[in-house]
Length: 586
Image 1 (tube, rainbow, N blue to C red):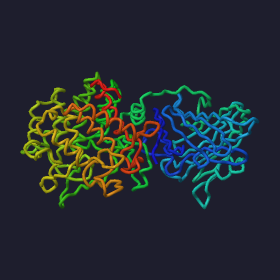
Image 2 (image 1 turned 90 degrees about the horizontal axis):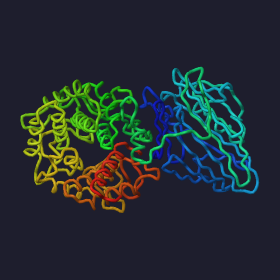
Image 3 (image 1 turned 180 degrees about the vertical axis):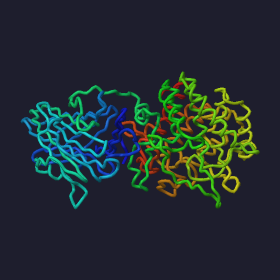
Image 4 (image 1 turned 60 degrees about the horizontal axis):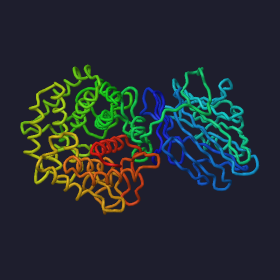
């Protein structure tokens, strides 16, 4: 299930799913850890003596781009507008305006259910009611969360703490079903809590209720307040908003906070890939935002070359599926493009006015030295894993990114441009056959599989824009990888297995691949009309909040894999920039 909203501040990230359940609660120092884990945080309303949860079938839900959600109850026609945001105090606020359509005053009770698996475990948690804060507090070790609520006339009217997911206990949300909570003051272990506020909603009028989630220092949290109107920072461009939500203060750029992907193999996208981070930094720098790129490059400088690949939000090595042994021999599972693209991002950030002296004099020099050592006698870099992290070999895309990184380094004054030209010539001599091939497989044989990654060559390195075989390469990609369904879009490569939905298509359409086709068509052919069509295609399949998934179901158009994906938003943003520069109306 995708995440129409992601809210990120300096201390807290909150993710909300399509049923308006909080599914991600992430905090410093490691936002790769989800304290909500497998248990959603829910909101309920008791209307006419019946409790119904806002994620249930009795409610219709409409998500809007400004952090707002509108609900309507099918029976009572009670209407709720929820405004969601991070406040200036870095707490997460939800303000619910309850509208009464009837000619009489209604008494309703709003409930909030909280169950955390702090540090992704339900062991050893304490949940307790704090009368001094008029809130329930959940804590384990140094992780402390405060949940409070308030109406226009007062604070919490109902509260209780208990156990859930243990010994057959479902949770304290069950206690709310009769409209009353039993006031149990504390529970430990697999603990949870529910709080409630009574509200009188005037005839054909409205009442406001607020809910707050805050990180606190135990045992005191200075300045705990509940506000009906909390000043919130907003971003009018949804792509910029979602990108900023994935960019952390320490420089890590998280691929996606959507933890629904856990259902596949208990692994997530809550990591900083340097490929994704570099391309996000590049796109934002071209929008005039250099701070993200400066922080990202500082984060990169703390890692070891050539391991600029996949790290947790705090900089630990991320989970991997790449073996360290091949053909019985030790072998480092590198991805050459991840390291090289950091130099591409560095050049773009510096061009936009960023200050990179420290990075260039240390990590920049090391990266160039590493890439130079990797160049083989045939001009190609040594083998590694491809863009999709699926196959080992010498790939056209990866080699071209090494060349682009070295070309950027030459313009940054870190090396001579002959290194980039040497790799470019190696690509022409070894990876061109009536068009650019995907690469050489692990045995050195040419891999003719059509792969969308070759579209990135003219996008990242202008050298390839006028390359004689580039137009034929782009045409071949579009012909082979366009999904021939009502949905359309470009698949990653022929026979893509990842989240495969049908054998009728080469794979599922991906936002990034379709945006690469738009950019390549514009840069190489000057085909603005087709580029505009493809850009509008991406907008068509975005969620109502603007959230962009990784890939799309080829027949239904539903989001697949994670949503939102920061990289998808970066490529949409860059496509938009190129089209506007070309004078196109969008």
